[in-house]
Amino acid sequence: MSDSLAEFRVARGELERFMLAVLARAGADAASAEAVTRALVTASRMGTDSHGLRLLPHYVRALQGGRIAGSPEMRFERRLPATGYLDAGNGFGHLAGYAAMAHAADMAEEVGMGAVAVGNSSHFGAAGCYALAAAERGLIGLAVCNSDPFVLLHGGSRPFHGTNPIAFAAPVADGSPYLLDMATSSIPWNRVQQYGAIGRELPDQVAADAEGRVTRTPAEVAALLPLGGADFGFKGAGLGGMVEVLSSTLAGMANGFRLLPMGGPDMATPRGVGHFFLALEPDAFAPGDPYPGRMRDYLADLRAQPGRGEACVLAPGDREWACQARCDAEGIPLDGANQAAYRELAERLDVAALQRLP
Image (cartoon, rainbow, N blue to C red; front, top):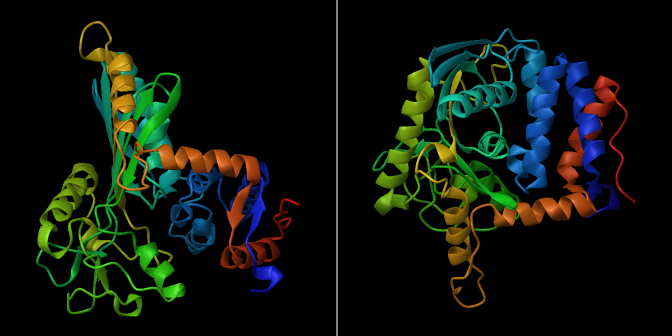
């Protein structure tokens, strides 16, 4: 590999500077650019580049193509004391996600819980960003979203559900939040691409070819299997359906099977993605506010469990917080493909190029 394609690292502030400038030049208003940048940088700092900095070129194409409104007219309606609906105005899903969770959190702080359905939205990146936004306010947060079909139904031969993520975050006194962010497929689609790029065979029971047959060859993959694989995929398919009901159905949007593909070729027509966000006030339930102590005890017990062989037992979020600390200290990595994509954006949009750390 040449030096020009070798991985390099950038400071968080420099990456934020570049993203904000690119999005503004592409037509995003300040609120949209800030929300997208916040979500992408959060994901990349936690080691989830599939939903982080890698997505910036795609969002620019969708914005300039007209699929995403750069200055959306979002409208929020509080329907009941603990429920609401946000029309995202076909803007960025990141702006809608942070706004909706803020509304849900406001209601939770007032009446103990808050739930917001979002319609007329778009891809929102990593679902964990929005569950985390609730935990940062001392609340329990849940975020789900539907997406276009990549995943077989249990026993099915063609994609039906999307990877339909579930993200859950809970605050931890004097510590980083508990953070679960998972797809309802056996593996994410980007894992197939990654294994194909390095010539590696996939694990068994995670992907299928165009006939719905399990394959371990990345080039043959036409769909993903639901969580649980060929034998127990009813579990992942059921979770994917639960996400579908909470996101598209509650918001009055088309289900994921009917969504336009995220990757195009149509980058002019809004997709109408649906999201759902829930925030809970922990001290609104059991008397005496036992939550902080019980959560601390639970995590202590979990992390104290013996590992298998050399493995170490981790709580959801532990890996992400360790990666975030490393990225904050050493910089956020960009591989050769992302470097090339970012150079093209800088040249085309007349933005100062991204500066690597020495």
